[in-house]
Image (cartoon, rainbow, N blue to C red; front, side, top):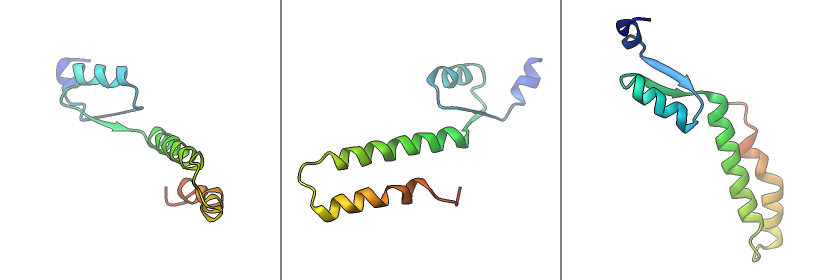
Amino acid sequence: MTKKELFNIKAITMDRWDPYIKVINNWYPHAVIVFDKFHIIAKFNNTIDQVHRDEQSRNNLSKQETLTLKHNRWILVKTKEF
């Protein structure tokens, strides 16, 4: 590819791995980075899991709070809107 062809690249899709981001910012500073849907959803699910674990590990949960946490976790993770 020529430099002109490389400069015509407007957007690049990838996962969120820092070395990839650094390379793209170095070689294609004009291009927009678009993170792919799979990796964004995976990161979201990991965050939800961590918050859920943290909340469950609290010592002062009432029985109702414990049941709510137990039965409502999948509301956030399983949605058909994506």
